Length: 210
Image 1 (cartoon, rainbow, N blue to C red):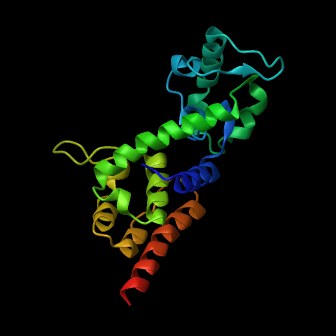
Image 2: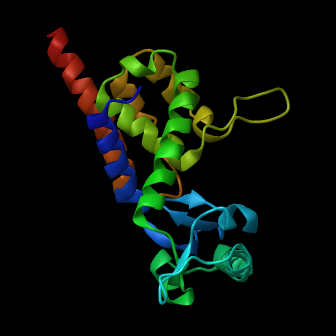
């Protein structure tokens, strides 16, 4: 269980980096996305959400939502290869469809709860970690996905590819975790803040042991 005070911090941290976008847009990989980085892999997944028309404030039919998704997804290749990728704000005036803030919040919480289950599988003592370590790891898994471990024929992916960091985390070596948490494809500031969260844990740990 995630205590309410910690859940609020996790939500705020993710919203800071992922944004809270109420319209469909293409992320940097050209994937249709909405809310706080919630991917919509198919037109059907988009149609399952309660979009409304921002001009009439009326609910939008599933067929209209699917059409909007398909029109947006058609730009995937252009967005993916563009040297100057369109930010989410670019798509605001490209659609009349929006979701409510509560819908975005609900999608975020569903994602967080699913990630919590994965984190407890990767780190057996996860629920006893310091809060700052939990916030850092929730940020990483939200961004990277849980992934899978290395097998004979495939390299590890997602958070599970961070074997050195995961070993450090499971050993309670927060200073080492801070050195091994760098991610490609995100801002330098986000990387710094993640490392700082682990460093906070290390400082507290050293304070207790001194």
